[in-house]
Image (cartoon, rainbow, N blue to C red):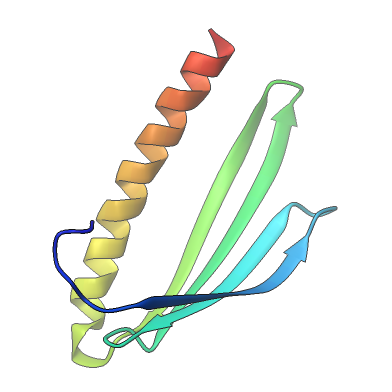
Length: 90
């Protein structure tokens, strides 16, 4: 969330599948050994889609805390995506 300095977070795009609408990144930082992020966008109809996030996290003893923070962050981000989509559709 930008208020606790935890060092640099490294992101490597592992794969992009445009046809399947999938993206996978391999991410890590000083405290988080593994933060693998899988994103998939599934079309529902001409005007809507379903957006899936899946994380694989490994941070040693901090894994439960990092997992909780990740969950909170993605909930916040998804609410923002939904607000943006409603504004664009309106």
